[in-house]
Length: 275
Image 1 (tube, rainbow, N blue to C red):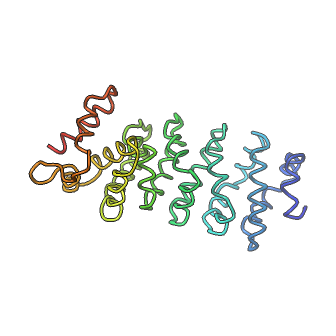
Image 2 (image 1 turned 180 degrees about the vertical axis):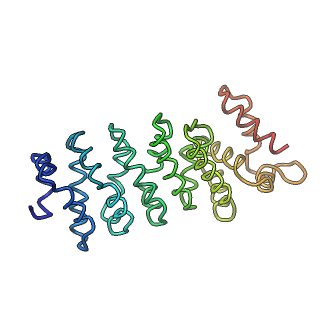
């Protein structure tokens, strides 16, 4: 058996031989080794094998490599060594199974606070939101679960609104009931976080952000925050605008005249809730 640091170089020409020689069980053992350098080399080799051909990819998955890789990715030192970005890149791979696998792995990683920040910082939320359009129910569910984990971090909230994440979760058609339940839990988590520091940050952004982001924040707050906060944001006790320099209520009225039916519906619903 070659030394670990030599394994990735072998994959390009001899990946089939590695599988035929029954080396996959040895790779799994390497994933459980105490030496973190061996972990890193084994993960890199498995990634190369998976990309080498569809048949070899299936052999690798059948050998049971996925679970130990996911468990290993939950360890901070592996994330620090750059495992998040390759997983995000794999979300855009043409191979459906690779996308499912990476979305599942990111969902597991997103349950950890440190990883939530790293996934969002590397653009993971944008790509995960795009996967909600998938017709593959498993991929769609994995993406929703990963987003559910990311919304546990209050610092991701504003970014999710900026990239139309709240509206996407509300409007997308989801296939499976467990996915629908996960979406409901995600929106509920967002509702519970709109107060204090998060709310103050969003109100600040409403005053400094460009118009498109301003609209998204207005609609998100109107849909998700409590009736008490809605009236504070849009109206005071006398039915007069609460903030002298804000245009939130006028914006909703303008949206009623929009050429977009969806914007008209959104504004109508918000004004109905405020009535």
